[in-house]
Amino acid sequence: MQSETALVTLKEYLDSVAPQYEDGTFWKRYVAKCGEFISPKVEGKHVLEMGCSTLVVSEMLASIARTFEIVEGAETFAQKANNHFGDRVAVHHALFEEFSPSQPFEAIVFTNTLHHVLEPESVLKRIRNWLVPDGLLYVTVPNMRSLHRRLGVKMELLPDVFASTTRNEIFQQNGRYTKESLISLCTSCGYRVNECFTFFLKPFSDEQMERLTPSDELVDALFEMGRELDDLGCLIYAELSPDRAK
Image (cartoon, rainbow, N blue to C red; front, top):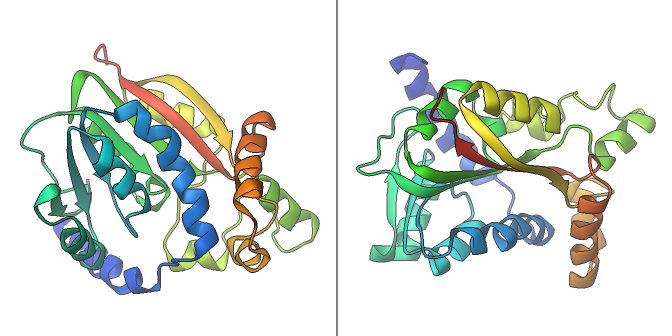
């Protein structure tokens, strides 16, 4: 467990980098793919979202959940969510390491955020206790063996697929996940893995894809190809159940 001083420092850091977080059209479109296939799974349920950033997935979840709450560590994003949703959504400005819900959730959505967490084991174990017995946790993280990272190695832009990019360093994206390592982490933290696959085949970096302005049809096709060419997609998805035997 991180010390109180470390948590204060983390809050300050989140507030300092939040204004730099990208809000590009392409980024929104491929992050929206997370929401598109997770939202139907949580329809009518009591749902918590772990981190909301630019509200791309949040808006989808809010429209389909029975009740919806957000826990967000960056004050900038928490305030943005409050302003956007008003009384429709309970927004908790707190670090994951500090938050304690008043009641358990039927579904928790943890998209594109786990790789920012410095102590993922601790956070995943906390989350397990926030779920009802048959609740589900939905996680997405970047895939270190993605096509665009492999291409970066071939072009000698990266020494290996696990190397940090400038973006990784700016936003403290310390997590380095493959399907195998994500499954291993989650099972060690007391979860059963119901489903796990990669999705969205991204040939180039976010910045390069933004400049290419791909059509909606191409974005849809890239999503499906990431499913077909498993292990090459830029994101990994996992559906998890709490293993009460652990």
